[in-house]
Image (cartoon, rainbow, N blue to C red; front, top):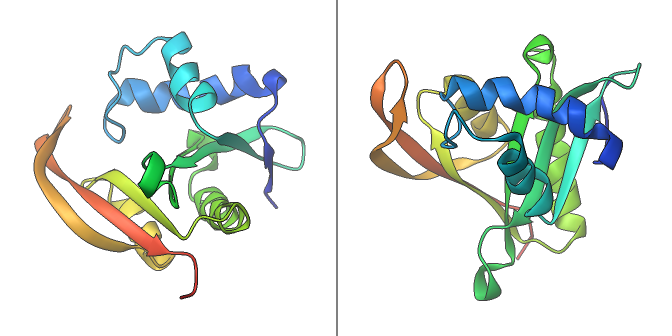
Length: 165
């Protein structure tokens, strides 16, 4: 069972241990593979409205996600999230649990929709999971991501309405 709770300062070393290999691989997030730890912390912890961790029964960090307004001002009723699962926890439902919790949190905070602005098309596992969880591909931007092995690949904009009319 995965428990999800708000990020605490003491979580940072474990969160960085989850984020660093994903960012260094350069195949799912547009961040530079040589992103510094300080910059990663700014992007993942300091800038978002809130950051969360997914923990196993022993309290080990299995994944992390952030939640923030997708746009300022007149677009702040739609949120954006980013998710990273630890390599050893992939395939165990952690990303699914984080996405489900993020939607509940977003609804409770008054967000009407969730939008992912840059889902790398070659990240087929993520695209498939988000679609299973009700997200639609509302647009595809051609060749906007420089994948380290595949070259230029597309990125999807994915969206899910959270609030009833």
